[in-house]
Amino acid sequence: MHAHIPEAVTTAPVTYQRDDYVLYRDPERFWLGKAGHTAVCRVDALIPFTSGEVRYTLTRLDTGARITSARARYMRLLPPADAMHDIDTAPLDTGTPADMTPAAVAWLTAQTATASRRPELPRA
Image (cartoon, rainbow, N blue to C red; front, side, top):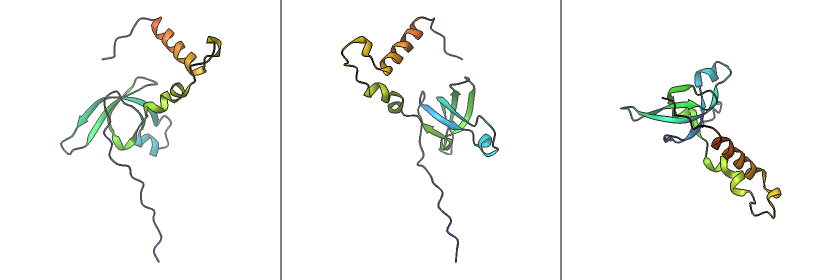
């Protein structure tokens, strides 16, 4: 009798676009048990290979560090719908300004913080 070996879970190949936000897991750090193996990143560049594979240059949002030659199978898209869900579902038609929802207050706070400082040039 043969032992049942479950099939590996695979995902369909995904091609990410520039400026997508992704969750990236560094496979070497992960398998070695090192801290900091998973990070939220922005896709900065796509690098096509003649084999048909596409690799990516990412920027970590927490540190600004670059990750080069990242493979799609170690990335997951962070959907805009998830980030915007609280704003999209917030009841903004309340009776008075004092009744504004936390989502609206958070958005206004972010806009004020951005508007009150000099714009920064993109990193080279």
